[in-house]
Image 1 (tube, rainbow, N blue to C red):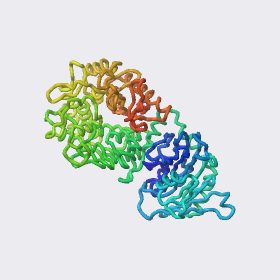
Image 2: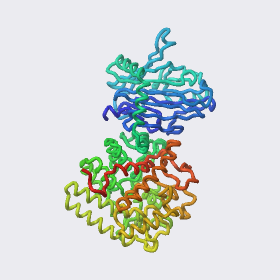
Image 3: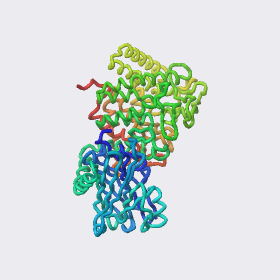
Image 4: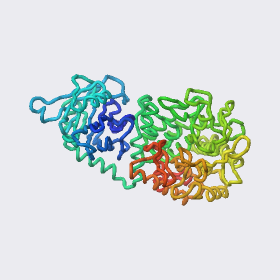
Length: 639
């Protein structure tokens, strides 16, 4: 890792923490309310409002909420080897004397490097200086030496063996109690909101202890200016959509300690909580790579791509989900990998990306053809192979998981056929994306000079498009739809019926019929808040729950690009601007980026099964940005 990225909010479990990734040295904020007798370290992001966050970690700010008190925490990194920070009590929910906030310093598991354990030394001024000057901290690990300086003297500075033990200690004994032991691996600085409502601190690395201490003291003097400048720079970008995309990606980019890698989590709270430390959804991470590429962060884009392809299976399958607690090597997710990689390539123009991943993408296509044509008719179904120990393996639920749209009404009535390892339903979205995958593989092959393979994939794509056009067009409803093995169409529609637009499948009259009769119909998919996953007039969209009756960024994104490809740029533009307005409402009010959104203004965006800071929600403002600055697969290449 290059030094300029070493310090960042890497710890997935603790957002209010700045971590030096190579060594694991961290500075973490916590708080205690006497009113509620509750200590909180804000683990998992509970009680956190995420503020601006530079993608490279040069600035980050968040608000911590406890018992009606609001504490702002800011970090700014003026150079690769130092940073300054501030804790500021902005709104008190009780007498500030009885609201305490804390600064923990130590070495944690969030680190890349092996080697000697880190050590901490607390230096207390002697004589009368002990009552006037704050203590100083010296940290060492390997060849690195840091010094931490405080602007104000804490009420207490002490060592602890385990930060988690402090919770029961203060809640049982109160804030006046001190730890009797004088040894420990972590240092805790305690501050009272009445005595020190604002605390500045700095940490700097040096070649020897004195140099580190002098640099830290010098930075502390400049801290107000550095913090203000960092925030001004973070907010300098005029486009609100750009800032939102950057902040969401910045906060959800974390370090996976188990696999020793940087990646962007779908939700850092999910990864830290229910999934045990890391969470890698296939399609989510591909979208995250594209977002990073759009923002110009090639290093992060490549990290996300590598995280995806690192788990490729011998069968060619790219697992749908990998986490600490469950690994889905029996099922994938919708095959968008080639399409997303091609979009990233068009933006970064790095042919090494194609050389590296083209062979894996070819194997991935072979997996779908070999394992997911359950009845051998040339159309694919979602399924689950009898392998691995993932939850629900080789069941109908696992097959629905492979679609990533688990409770979509189009799957109503589908059966899982164990001997085929698939559902008995040819899904329109899956078959459209396979056509797109083959078409893009042809583009990649031609870029790599593999003319014979390019011709093969182009021919396969055209033949498959004809098959989809023939078998999955519902003439009665004038739309593409999924079809059961008995020949009947699924009675329920979804936004996946518009994915043929992205693959270039519909004839012009079919595209016109789909768009005019369904997409733009205000009783189904359109309105001030387009595009729900299921039609608004479908009874199964009520009550709205998850993929039923809610708006999802990925389906909006793919439909938007399909409209552009099919010759409906004005409709695409309207979809992009309405999606931005939809996103900005909860973003401006609460800094929320929802997993999915309500198409009905009378229903809340935030429900019990909605994560409020989920990365792919930022696909909605991304459309606005792409409308002005896209490198499109469907338009002449820019030179």
